[in-house]
Image 1: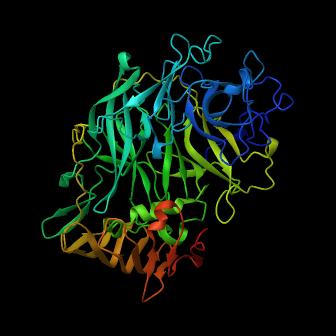
Image 2: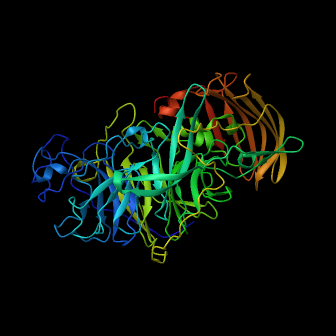
Image 3: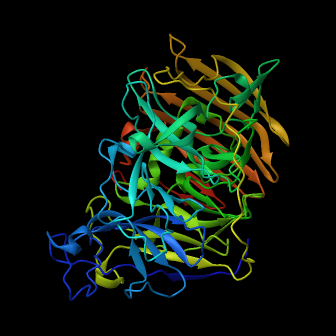
Length: 576
């Protein structure tokens, strides 16, 4: 892709010199409408404001408000409405705090019980409501832009999903469907026998008597039937890649609401975005060779995707840089550990990419490697521009939250950027019909046990390259047949990608018979053809990934090096 674009920064409140009460003085903000926290990551997720492309929704952490008086409400995690057209609200600010003075509904949690309004943010088409975290903010009869939409008119209604305990189930990263009626979310299971994340879809109903939005008609975006396995087993123990049910972690919806967006492997040691049809469960690849992606947003007209990826960052090239390797060892359960590489504590290595969802071809939008994108991107309602928040590439080990030399006002470490595309014809935000339910997924009743994901049974299989060659796959299970303990692959002139031929061996070995375990890779691959390369681990002990990666803490033993056309890519140091 070679689209023309310009990048500029959207306005934000001034930065408080500290988080101390009263540090946001009238000198810093004469309007008394709040200051950003000076902490790393003060600007986060963004959301589309559908009635007008002159505005965008932005999540912000405010700090320094006085302990009493009218300005005391400008504190904590809030949702801002921000002008994108250079204009201001009647008070002279280019932003308006929608939630200042609201109390987040008690006991209703988002990811890890983090009760705030700032992530994710999805606007409703009526301009009066938005999903903000695990609640819906609602200004009644007034659109957010209306001067009569004040905190006195705003309400926060929690999302309620009964997980079988009679209490609200924890919703991880809930996202509103563009039809304004359905919602999707993730749910994590962690136990000695199982570590997994499952996605759900339900329908919103306003429960006026309890002042909340109930999530009903819930279905899992998952089905253990063999029709939805990443690899189908045909006669003669032949493996066939089967793009269906490729949700993994739920990340949102396509612009028409008819498909759920999730992340799963297409190439080995990469995590790409997929769109899975709600009715058939068939999956369509959206990105290609992203290294890792999870924040994605499709333009309202459905023509483009902004995908935050590790492609271009150099973070994962040592592991996933060799293209054309099928996701076979990934079936041993390495994906969770591979995913943990995208962060180093508070530093995220994502870069914004403009993607053609029909081909997966991408173009990096942020050329400055000193900034990394944060949370979810969004589009203007007319599909002419994309918006994202980003943070200085710091805030990680060994010096958390140390970001010296910020060029931003007040030394803040985050900002909101807008990429405008002159070649994109502005189009009105489409009216989205009610999306079909995910009938391919399992219906879910409160308290229902969630089945573990099936895996390839012990045995020897053959996978044919779509162009040429074969891959011999040997699977070893534990004694209870609950886990894959070893998955070994031998490639012989194997090719799925034009001009790329693979030979050699690789394997993924679980180090303990438990759901959460270190895993060891053994790699000795050679790539020939259009590009020459190798992927090799230190031997005889291989490259062992610790479960600490699940906490975004890079801890490994051994080495893994990928060399492409003479350039060697090596792993980061432990703890970085």
